[in-house]
Length: 386
Image (tube, rainbow, N blue to C red):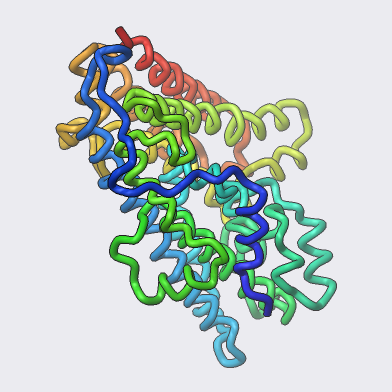
């Protein structure tokens, strides 16, 4: 099999490079213009307690998925229990990915890793052609529409459950495709984590994969750059206010995407009588994981706002976006806190599962409205500038 590093060579040559930085790089400034707030500790907590642990969790769970697929792919490993383990590992890896979608700037954007990991809808016809060709190679699945989370999902799930091997066994070509696509996804996850993480605390097995890449992602050290608002990191960060604006825009953006695209687009197609198209528009419909995906997107916002994983208003970090907003406008902090809770509950507790079978109705509308309200509340933060 051709080394996966070929993909990264092509990718890096096509993208705008953001240079690496050392400890002597110029750092972003706190100024009295804009928000008039010293965000030094807020950016540190956000990066160290939200971004890095989320991407590390995804990378580690991608390894578990990879190992499960390796076990399943062996001649003696093609059991229902092993396929069930693959499916469980896929769902587990999906959680931190969806909980990272409020921060798709930086490496996820610059290195093209967002579409590579999560393109949707799938190019199902192209996937089937590759399978039917009987020979699966890395070259054949370079297009983001034929690899990533949802290609793997398509191969292993049916109607919300692991495929039943006694009635729908995976062919040799499908298993080969699964192995290559999972390795591709694992490598994307390692690259995304490493580009944020830099050179610190890299395990031997992660380093062995990084060594196969034609470009070393640790050189970008995006965590250091973002905490210090360094423009050369790939996002235009002249001051720490600019870094905060990225967080605000990321949270508002994913709230809007959940409302308008993830839930709204299938709903609108269904209301127009185009039910078949509507189902195909539903992300993660093979696994019936859609509502979990959307709820985890709101958790992504919650983690970002309160300054840590599993944080809420009751245990928020003292160096969080919430504390900053409260210091400027306590009513807005209360509004955003309520909007996060309302959006999460409207999706996770309100919408009927699976979404693909319940595309319209008052509960769907309520979830869309709650996410839109959350988006608008976040956008008000920028009004706090002096």
